Length: 133
Image (cartoon, rainbow, N blue to C red; front, side, top):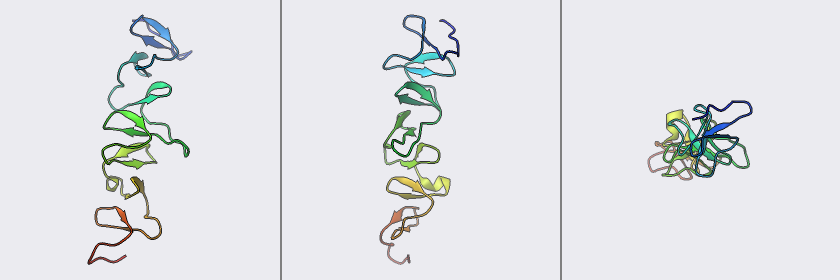
């Protein structure tokens, strides 16, 4: 296996033992191992453009991506009823873990006007019976 230089940013291609600047489709550049890998290491996420393993998915207001622990990928929409947590660019099972509330599948600090937090930490339009808004 070739040891590829970090400058320029090159990765070892394991199929033909060469150094490449970007990994082939279906493989991802592991910046720690300096190799093209078929799946990213634990605690990193697969980013498909460019094919790269990242510890934090890129977040911008127009095209935010979130690290999905269900499939190990950077995704626009979280799977399995997970919530988008913008600050950390990850998908979470519950917003309450981070002392946040859930609104529209996103973790928020406060419910928007006209919504109220229920006992499960979910913003609802109508308070449950025997509670007040």
